[in-house]
Amino acid sequence: RSFKLSYYNEYKSYLRMLVCALAVTLVTLCTSELVNTNVDRVVDLSTQIAKAKVDVEVTNTGSSPETKYRILIEPQAVNNVAFVAATQQGEKLAVKKVSDGVYDATLSTSISPGSSTTLTLSLTYTHMLEPYPKAINQPDNQLVRYNSNSYFYTPYATTTQMSRFKLGSTKIESFTPRNPSSKDSSSVKYGPYPDIPAKSSAKITLHFENNSPFLTVTNLLRIIEVSHWGNIAVEEHYQVEHSGAKLKTQFSRLDFQRNPIGAPTAIKSFRTVLPASSHDVYYRDDIGNISTSNLRETDDANELEIRPRFPLFGGWKTKYYIGYSVPSYEMLSYHGSLYKLEVPFLDHSFDNLVVDNIQVKVILPESSGDFEIKYPSYEIERGPDSRHKTYLDTTGRPVLAFTAKNLEENHIQNIEIYYRFNSIMLLQEPLLVVLAFMAIFLTVIIFVRLDFSISVDENREARQRVAYLVEEVSNICNRIKNNVSDEMIDLVGSAKTNKDVKAYKNSRKEIEGTYKQLITELTGITKKITSFAPSLADRIVELNKREGERKAVINNIAALAEKAAGDKMNSSMVTEQTNTLSSKLANVQSAIDDTLSTL
Image (cartoon, rainbow, N blue to C red; front, side):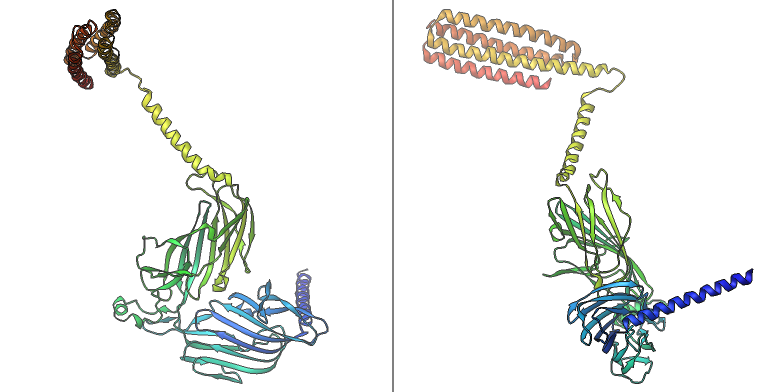
């Protein structure tokens, strides 16, 4: 039984291999109608990124038009390829990933049978340059090793091809010789090679000097917070590593200070490009603000020179974050309730940028919904949505999360987010502020006005009664002034004018009746004040004394009015005495007010 099972498994294995072979044969047959008549490949290795530019002249040897061109990546470089692009006679083509290492470029103009066209392919690879040796001393130059193929890896047969590797350095330790191949001051040339079959491979290794910054962002978190009040805040959290050759010995700060250029692989600073309209820029780490930065504003962009707290050598890491704000009109537009946010998924962090992992979080205004995303021309994964609660939020603001891997400068493209938002919700936060202040004021009013104590405070009640009675005394004194003193002064004037004794006596009788009633009320209230607050007795006595003085002045005014009504005194003398008595009355009134203020 075990023998039969083993035979069955072996049969399945052979069958699977046969199917794979048939599939490869079909692919070859389908693609064999195109021929690369001429290939000119230039690979730039002067930085930490391998950048290949391939000019291909393609001929259709079949009997039907071809609308696609397939691009293959060498198997050992599938995990390192970061960017693939193609143009046909200067016009950009749509490139679609079919599977790992396989891409299809849709031609803008199909290739008719027997005709040719020219394509330009652009490919970039990250982490293809290997430091060799892996550890060096502080003053040493860095040597790197690059493994590649002397042929252009393609699914099509090639009539003739040539490859040139630009090293950016005159110090070339070694390279794999292939006939023909040659070396000049800073480059290595392979070819031309005639009649190369499809998927040909001839391994080569280049070993040369490369002191360019090997700076890699291992993790990048971009947080973009959108406000419909006119501002978009961006914050970027970086985890950066020097991916070059590590230090063999301990770092010497003394040697570095003496001769900074004596450490050619050290990264002392780098430049980050921000939008031209950015403002409120900051650069910080876990310790706090880093002051060794410099912001230079230009017409096209703002350049932030970032200088870490320490120079970076191979294997060294650092963490920091930067933030800035831009006006919302730069990235946000709307039509009715439909809004469009267009922001860079990745920005220019430094030259020859390499980002292993990036996460972008977009925080939209509360109550936003109906999201639609238009992605850039590379792979982006959307994570689960979440909520972010901050000031004056109720349900929280929606957060859209996106992730991507293995990015470089060619991936600095915009992501477009469409959503709906009702503008009336802009009033939510101001209304919440108004309601919050209203609640605070109502609480204070209730707390101050109401007595929540359980026991009765007799002294407090006595003070409240006295305060109320003093208020009544003040009101009565004002009524005496208005209804007695001022009326008596007016009576003198009317008596002098009318000379009517009877009318005078009636008016005087009415005023004196009012005065008597007010004095009775005042006496009763002052007695109560004295009983509740004996300490105020002397001030009550003072008040009664001042009131007596006012009564004497009022009596004098009444006598003057009687003489004026009976024409027993000439007008000029009446006027003179009236002014004198008015002045005395004003002085007495001022003294009464002073006494009331002490109560």
